[in-house]
Amino acid sequence: MPELVEVELSRRLAEGLSGRTVAAVDLLDSRASALGPRALADAFAGATFAWPRRRGKLLLLDTDGPTLGLHFGMTGRLVLDGRAALDRLLYSPERLEHRWLRLVVTTDDGGRLELHDPRRLARVTADPDEELLGPDAAGVSVTQLQSALGRCDGRAPLKARLLDQSRLAGVGNLICDEVLWRADLSPRRPAGSLDRVELARLHRQLRTTIDRLLAGGGSHTGELTPLRHPGAHCPRDGSPLARAVVGGRTTYWCPAHQR
Image (cartoon, rainbow, N blue to C red):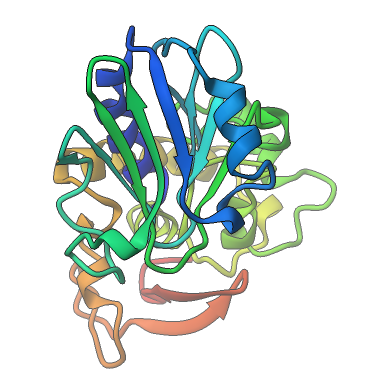
């Protein structure tokens, strides 16, 4: 499912929109936007795209008018001029079918941007409120990360804090488990219990893991993800992996080295 990594790959694809002008916007699924097809089309008619941005899992397609915000839900994928941003999306069909098309933006030079989503959870907005999101996980500072984990109310599980998009934007289930596995930290640790060394280690692994997953082509390319099933063992020390629900999400970790 799309996490920071997948949305960043979609943002890079959307760079191809820069400088192009909107000819038409067709919302094919009215549930995908609160604006409705006519209002959305009117809002972006004749707008010229600037350089795309991303904040967490939110793709921001700035124009010389409003900003087109795309949230990919669980199975959303972006296609520009026939080229898909992702070769594969875990837990989603690999093929793209016309019946899953939710949004089409055509440009005056004949270009075509498509949003596909089999599960119909993707959302399209105009001028989304970016301040509802915390700092982006790919560029967060140590101080910002410490604030996101919480000082006074830091008794919540570490994983729950990392998944809270209002505190830290972009980390999803797969990235979180991979980062904590690499940082030797239990997902059940109270978020506010990390000392300075542990906090620095978590920050370093957050940044380097995101870079690794981007280079690999998706959040599913980590070392731990293929082992997210009962009976699996830690690829580092061979110990049995634990499985539980933490922060409302199915979680895998190695109790032998994640403390």
